[in-house]
Image (cartoon, rainbow, N blue to C red; front, side):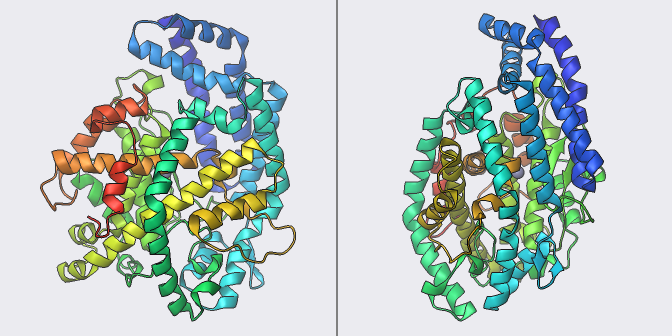
Length: 531
Ligand SMILES: [Zn+2]
């Protein structure tokens, strides 16, 4: 059985590497040829797993459950790869083609704003900085114009994904995706409900404060605030209303150099990663950010579109967090286990580091601000980070609940579902919108990373658990991670090295003493005076 698995891996490895390379090239160039190559390799990988000569022995091997834990885990992971591919080849190809096509539309789309084609980055900067009502509204509406362009095909994609999910015995695609991630829908729902209950009241208070400050800044009544006033297309981050403008401090530093020094200081070298990465904006390039492990043999890259501001400092740390995790996985593990335990654990590591760009002490230790500035910034920045976490947690509730509803009943009024969730969870009022808008379709994750968002919030929970463990086991009181190589060593030993050897709750139990739960997150961020 071991030989058979190894020979199968020898077929998967080159194809998966080819998919990753094509994905990378497509994101960097935006070229049609690269997107076509991506689609072709994805289809080849699908065909391999669909082949009955692969799928049938795999199902038998899984039933036989071999004694060797690494072999059993490898077979389980292979089976989870194969399961969604047990659908009709034509259906699967349609899904891939449609998803790739919509993704490309998102990547190359340049909304019209004030008479010219504009980048998403530029529009987001208008939202973040502008105070003029008309310009704000126009920028926000411009960002939403991608919705109606993709919505009909996105609906079709949802139907096709559901059809495929039913073909392999699941009620809908949302439930299938959770099963493929070894997640129990009820357990995930319970964590979200508990977080909802824990955050509802603190968020309401915070939102009142945000509204008051925003309204004063914009010269409107709090009751007159609309989605374009929150400085972000989805209100997924907290607006800068706590008297801290960290962008000014980051404007004059080399973000890449800060990140490089920080990771070197905690004993995690990112030199090779940065050397093969794509860091700056370019025509046709995907305007978002991601990290990718191309071959599980050391070719690890991040894609950024750097601008000298706090958000991109945080994003750089976030993507490098994914990358150092990939780089820290034990190379002696079987290839199949040379991956993070789960999306949740890799997002957690990314978030653990991504949070630091808002920490006054971290900024001081990295030389971004002086001691006096750090003292002045400590209180407002920790208030802002707390706000950030609360606001994000409410936004993640919207996304999880929207996607659950989207796949459970795609024929419902999705625009109404979207806005009712926004109103309930984010306390943002639905604006008057013209006929034919599809704001729900303007979030790229629904296309490109479907049923993924819940993992971000579970990741925040795990990040807080890991932070608490680091505080208890590694850090002296009040010390930051900076310059402490024991931080990298602890993470490598407890989180990175085991790769995909265990389910994430088992990894969490071994690393932090408990499965992933909302309590450490609540303890870290919901107190009135955050740590
Ligand atoms: Zn991430």
